[in-house]
Length: 211
Length: 224
Image: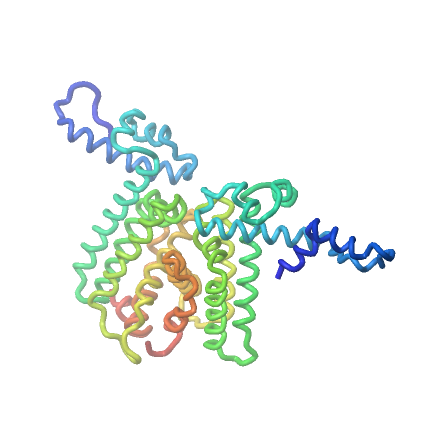
């Protein structure tokens, strides 16, 4: 929401912060609508209702802005996931809650889903690096506190990363297919996919169906 | 493969061969003549290989036509005789690499015995083997293709879907598992391989086999 015109007594810092937030939101929306080529500084500034020169006060270039938008998106997503994980009764419950929260946020904000899951791999090396880091950063939420595993013992390290990567891949493809708003319906199968390497299929299903 | 043939076909060598044959009228078959199509394909291959290498070294964006022709050792005109531009070279190289990888996976996963675990492991081993032997092509297909152009992104998505289909056929049918299981498994494997390539360690991709094999089998085994 833009600030009213004229004198409003708001501090310069507040206005600057507000502008920055609007630019970051506009970046995700413009990317979603117009793609990388179409998301020009002019297009983003227009949507954010800032002047191009104000844009450049905050960001040196379009690409710097993209990285910032990506970081902001990951931060908000992580916040939701951590809060939800923390409320879980045990590890399995926590993983389910975290996944549920992630899907809810992505489904509610398709532009964010597109930014985080699709553009993350497409818009060039700096954002790509952020995508990689973001995926890696979610791995500990799965790994930490995980039970030692049944049968042959703990699943291999790669399993954690493959789970997070596989989920991101599936969700990204659905977003690309224009189905971002339906991501929540993947919860049961993705939760099973996440828990199975640690608990086995039967136990994973029991936990999910008891929610 | 190519160097011996190239030497034979270079102008100086051609002259040398002709000079030697001069004293008696040369028999028609003395000068080696390769079919035009073979030569053209060979040059196309060199151009595509050059692009794969350069893209792996410096990225698609930074790679110029002049870089490609220099690396491939062809004239600029030759490149444009065969390809409309940089993107077309990339797409042709992608298609060729994808076809080769798929062929190897299909062969590796083929099994006369009704043992799905052998099929899956065979296919995975074949894929990792291809990555290990073709690091530049693997990087081009699995990393650069995602961001080079919208068309290359589409090719990647289509190729991924093709591999998902291969996995669906190799994996056992289990009604209790969701339809998307093959997709999430392949996506997970692709992610792990992607990271391996990014770490510039594609040559050791085969080390990933035991873990990835276990990962793919996990949903199907009675107890984890």
